Length: 86
Image (cartoon, rainbow, N blue to C red):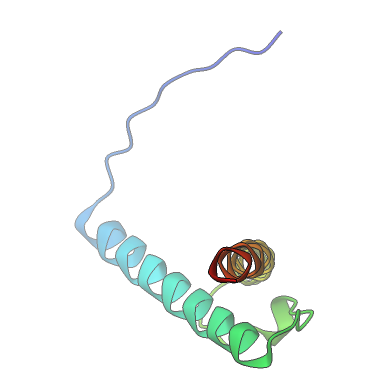
């Protein structure tokens, strides 16, 4: 059995600034890595050590997982659109 509890977080102003900065760095890093994947046209096998970001290792690892997923969706979309165009 699983119990779910709702909780409301009330971050301080300092924590809000940190959350916003971390979120922006995460998005910037993920976008840069996806651009590298697209430019290469193949899966580059990124891991947390390959992500140049000022983030904790766990977040860099999550970026590596996310960009693989995003690139797979991108390649499927490109293939589907190419078939529709012909």
